[in-house]
Image 1: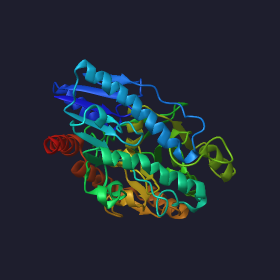
Image 2 (image 1 turned 90 degrees about the horizontal axis):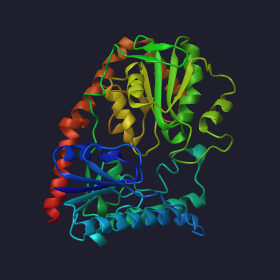
Image 3 (image 1 turned 90 degrees about the vertical axis):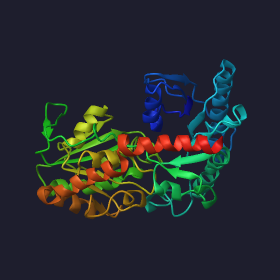
Image 4 (image 1 turned 60 degrees about the vertical axis):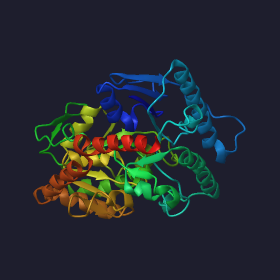
Length: 406
């Protein structure tokens, strides 16, 4: 069979499906903006990221880029068609407009859209944090951003999203045509390992016997609660003089606004704390390769995960699969996965004191909380295991969309 995957960040959410289908002997083509990485048996076609157009209204800037992405992908698809390639199904992420014009090339080919987030101007991520209240212009821009969502919803034969929370953001008229299928966690790779040691710059080695607080995000920013964590840490370190904090993530901004008083949120929060944080015990590790990242999870005594009501990070599920005792925010996407006191601990997002207390309690009585890590891993094995649960469910979805569209 012929499969076409489309996502600007290769291989992203399609890594497991594309690898599996190619290994099965099917013909797999992947259109992307990403030059790095390859998957065995997958033909990758790269197109350049578009530049913002001049003179475009700020509210329409995302739409303009989406149209540029969509037309670039459409031209590639026309070339594939001229070569004689016709996919049995196209699966693509809708968020950047890449699938908008697929039906103009192959009108009868089933199109499965990945619908990650429907934006809302109220009671949402936009106005969740009172510290960063949205402007009137922010609301207009976010409302307009859904133009790409709506165009994609009208284009695709069916939709997929990874969590019930994300599906619930979409209007009811479309929600019925979106299936919840998570990409899955490789629980054979991501697992507890009490023998792991993590070596830090300077020769320091940490293991599961050390009191280690961990936190990870693509970038250190308020959307993932970095400001709340930083404000909790002075109290934690004062109460636990042997504890160390390992913070993985970059200094850019993936979501939300940039800091007003520094080049990065890390710099701004350090300045705010004014020397109250013992930096000899706080290790900013930046971006880590995957093996180092797994080691970070495996030596963790308590892992902190905080998020706005936004896309649930793979990192939470990976921390749970590694058997971490997780202290997380009591926000809707997290509550879909963690039940307080059952497979993790929940705190109010805006309460650094409560966060510090929960972290400290786990450090002070690790044996009392060990069962939470065991239950966390079992949750991921039961609901999000790649090989047994998620990949089979996704393959069934592909075939169902093809069958129902034929």
